Image 1 (tube, rainbow, N blue to C red):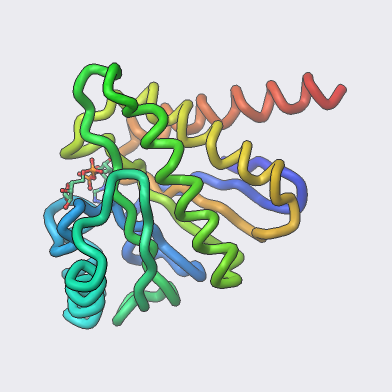
Image 2 (cartoon, rainbow, N blue to C red):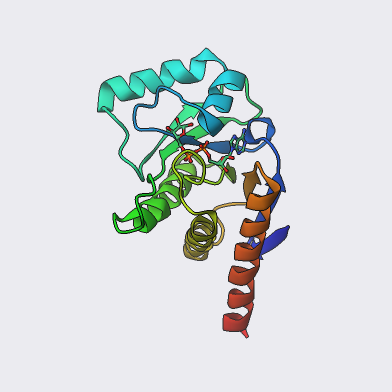
Length: 189
Ligand code: APR
């Protein structure tokens, strides 16, 4: 599944983000930055202890990472160059700024990537696992946030990818991305 926004290719892949080759992969972390399950666990398992050591230093210096913020570490043994750690919102029904916080996760990671000159970035489906965010709503928010950011910065990235772990999640993101792309085409015409 592929779309283009400005000079950026936006793609979806089905698989394990820890095996994805990009300048940066995004970790769906928690505020402690000390690891967990899901994507977080996989990244630390496969990336090795160096990533956790850097996360510990960051947490020691600046305290817990607030939901919506992002920090950058090297990628240890992973194929990526950098890991961008962000904390998604825990779904509590939708009336506690979950959508706004989820948008901030994507924008914070892309802003950090721009600052570091990282031109290919891969995201997991932030918050739709342990944090319980309904996938259809998360996919619409995620694709809208990323496409909106790319319209603001049309030459900053070569490729943005979501690496999705389940067929169901892939299908929901494919529908969301198609809808956004169709909307873009109609507004361009
Ligand atoms: N590659 C890509 N996607 C993955 C992988 C992987 N290796 N492992 C899990 N996923 C998918 C999940 O299936 C889900 O669709 O990533 C999505 C996000 O799930 P979580 O990893 O549970 O992330 P999140 O919902 O944001 O919850 C974060 O869980 O692991 C802990 O420390 C983490 O406390 C934090 C919380």
